[in-house]
Amino acid sequence: MNPINHVAIIMDGNGRWGLKKKKSRNLGHKAGLKTIENIITETLKKKIKFLTLYAFSTENWKRPKKEVNYLFNLLEVFLTKKTNQLNKNGIKFKMIGSKTNFSKRLNKILINSEKKTINNKNLQINLALNYGSKSELIKAIYLIKRKKINFSISNLDKHLYTANIPDPDLLIRTGNTKRLSNFMLWQLAYSEIYFEKKLWPDFTTKDYNKILYNFKKTKRNFGKI
Image 1 (cartoon, rainbow, N blue to C red):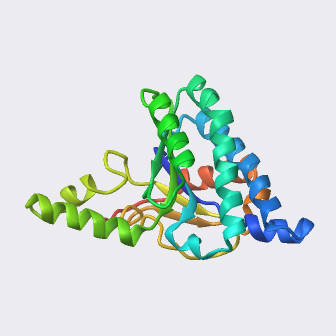
Image 2 (tube, rainbow, N blue to C red):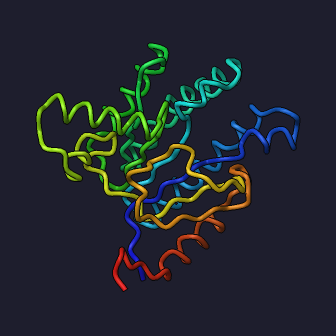
């Protein structure tokens, strides 16, 4: 049975779910928060050490300003209310992505959540915000060049947002869409990928556990026979 150390999830389908239910994309984003809480709780139970959630990409700035503002407001409220609970449960919070373009208030909340939970060991949640894998790679190459060190796999790893975080064992994408959407293109090189038809707010812990179980039975060769 394959061990699971790191699960990454593209939480797709919130907007479509909201439109189907009440003709409001924002309703879907709000409903998706409950799924996030359920999946965090289940990941903790399974003693999986890393969970990366793709929440907002560098391309998502193209969405209507009203929707973007609503998403960030949801995040602010969520972290303000839940950081103490994360800390109590031994969960470390880390943002991966660029903090540029965020409000001072949001940056302050993100930094506070990171500092408050920095020493926790039970589970590390990496929230991918204003994240794009291509810009992440360009940034890492720039840093390596500036430091005048050798270009190598290990040196590039050390200069990514995910430095000191193991690569995902599996990626789950909900929403019946089969693409990576500029997410962890380097880190997912040998990850198992599961595309789930359900929209994110409909994704349950039962669905999650089914994928985890199937992953454990998957033969992983890493180039070998």
